[in-house]
Length: 302
Image 1: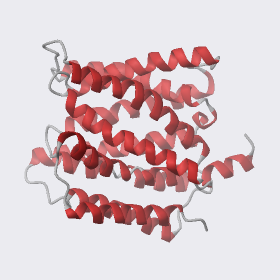
Image 2 (image 1 turned 90 degrees about the vertical axis):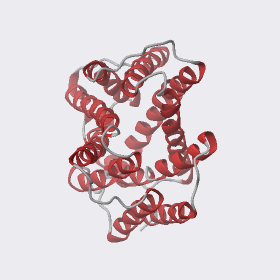
Image 3 (image 1 turned 180 degrees about the horizontal axis):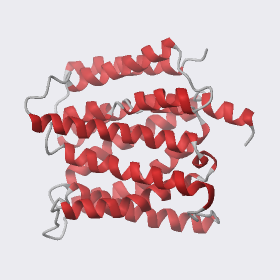
């Protein structure tokens, strides 16, 4: 890869088609939150996580083999791939454990420190991917929209809640660091299928051990809804949308891409309303306006 190509991939703004694709990915991830909830009655969260990672790893292997794409985990990508895999596994362990100690809304807000981690890290690790002050303003505007949708977090009421908040924050940091590892190392030159496979295969034993340590068990045959929800997570979300995401990360500015993820919790609220009948408040419209306005500032050409 030439230096000119690296420069373009680091700072390249999203064309209309790429922007539409990443919005679609955020929509899918928003509905993924509902899918996890629908399956919880029959399948505990960490168990869901390792099953979908294992299933997606198998699907990615079949797809790569049919296309002649090498997934050999060795050479220059090995170290970066293992690091990305560990961060990927930690992200989900931290998310699901945080929900036991703090509220879902607080978890959501603290997780979305991830775009800030990506923007700050890219300033030092990714050549020429540095935000102007207007882009920082847009990032803060989008985050304000998420806060308007979910509520500004008050100080933790007890030590357990504070611990849950810290776990959610750690999940957001792990998510952001995963994107930085993929963008700033040899993984940026690897096939997206290989990048994703590293994360899936490394995370599976981590999630299996965590599920066992925390006493998760499946006591009965999961129902149709739970199995369908797990299939959606495995086949559509992890196998397809995650693969598309890493294709975009390799091609465009990671900082600009990460800013779009503020749409995910808003789509999650919308999905909860459509599927579970959760209420939508007037503040939600204001939140959507702030997030979209922030994304325009972040992605506006110089």
